[in-house]
Length: 202
Ligand SMILES: [Cu+2]
Image (cartoon, rainbow, N blue to C red; front, side):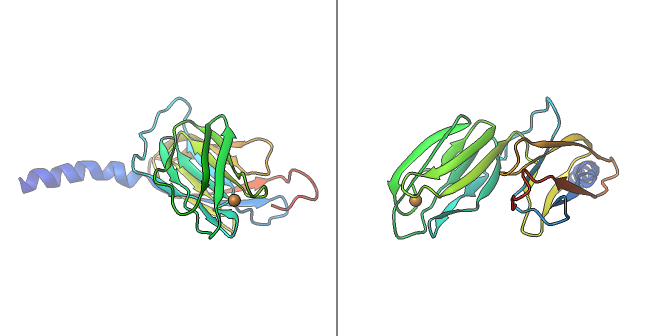
């Protein structure tokens, strides 16, 4: 029994070892780090199994959504706890997910299921400035850049991908070819985004 188990583990290991991390650095054309960019790798036509249990949180703190940008795989649920001592009314009119959580405090009893890919823009009916984005993607390989412009997709299997980059200030997604080699080598990719206009601050 023990031997058979070891054999099975050994058979699985090469597949697991071949996946490798992808490190991403996002910057603008002057070299300044860009935060809140979403990067995701997908292979056209390929369907990936859902995370299943992915449970994501978008808070409301000091009359702002936190985080400002989220990325989830299609089929994920997001809960919207209200951490303020006033009520919020969270909604979206986006085709990818249209919903409405009427004036509430605390944590709504059921999370919202994001079952279609696309961009979901969140707002609050009471506080017009409250704005946040959820990008729903058909792949488990995604990341968001931090305040240093860094993002990391762990364990990306070998293969040819399209690396797609989205940022709230971009008019359209950027798309780059990406190849992860069979040897399980990690890769670093630098992504440069051009500013939507001269005065724009990322
Ligand atoms: Cu509000």
